[in-house]
Image (cartoon, rainbow, N blue to C red; front, side, top):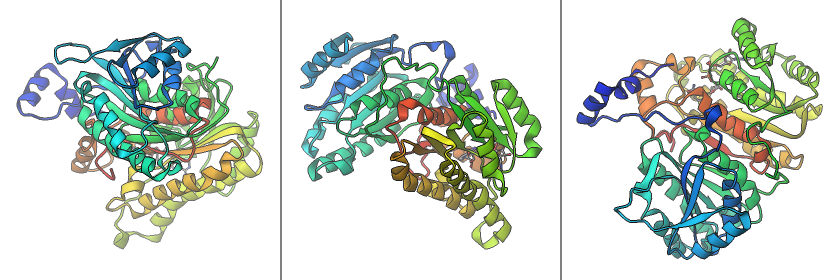
Length: 472
Ligand code: NAD
């Protein structure tokens, strides 16, 4: 779907007019290009609070970023630790001294805050970011690494929880398409940072800002892992894949190497077959609410040797206020958006269709987080998706299966094109990017959770909303 405001604002004349009227000019976001090579290109500044432990893992990850030039802030207490870690990782890290005069720009600022043990030590955050915030490049990246507060002693817990407010505020300050995100990594699980760092530093996270991901221990090892084809040899099934976000998910999973079964209702067969043909995938017609749907999905997946990834994307809105909502619209939305997902999960887990190390990725919505006028049915279903993810994650972890959800904000699809103009414009602009996201932004986040590199990440809900003000 096209965003006319953004197109005009970025034209030569439009830029002048919009600037003179002080109107926001939505930046054209950097998105993944197959020819980019290195997952991040440009200058990367790495810093750490005293006593932090993630720098070796950060630098080991950056070693694969052949297009990155790495430095650390001279004079910070962590300077020696970072230089030592650079030796171990075998990467060159230069010392950088910030001054108002220098024209240096950074594509990424990465701060390891795992060593922060109390609120007075939060000062290290200011020491690192203050001198360099104005040097963050267009579409730049901020990543802060902390410890899961619930795993910390009380003083450390208070300080680590503070990082959430920090990152959300940085996300609102950075502008020009830049983003800020937080990773809480368990003590001893630092090697699992490779996946989240690849995602948050790359253009794949273009529309993800102000978010946090929790990462724990897992047996994933980055050595020899093919980051360009992370899903090679995997089989995925995507529901609601004939168009919109579902079609984009199928395309991105196939790009990453997966064999993809695409499912949609029979009236969408032409579009579905086209998506399958485009990606060399397999079309499966069916309604996920049908009694035989779990069995059909299981049988189709077993023909491919079982499933490694199931993406519950199919969803509908049927908006009415509660007072005007007929039974059938309530039942329909609950059945499609959550109850069918429960039934399909139950079947795939009971009959072993979901392989060892499997991934369940669900599509929630910011409506499920914030609620929305006229969407009691939809918001209930999408909040229930969050409940399913959080409820199932601990049990599935014992089986080496992860379950996570993305919660899109305003994404440019046929679903949002049907929203009345004024509400649509508000949805598009009320976020840190001043624009709607693209289906590919949701798809990239789903591909991140689907990757073997995300084995340590489960029970997460990540909003793909350009840091929407709704429910923030
Ligand atoms: P869309 O309407 O363009 O696509 C949804 C697809 O699901 C359609 O192809 C449809 O035929 C299919 N589908 C519907 N009911 C089905 C059923 N019973 N069985 C099988 N397939 C069925 O919608 P979209 O915008 O691409 O949304 C995809 C998902 O993202 C949905 O779960 C939606 O709630 C969620 N979402 C979208 C946005 C947004 O801004 N577009 C925001 C938040 C969440």
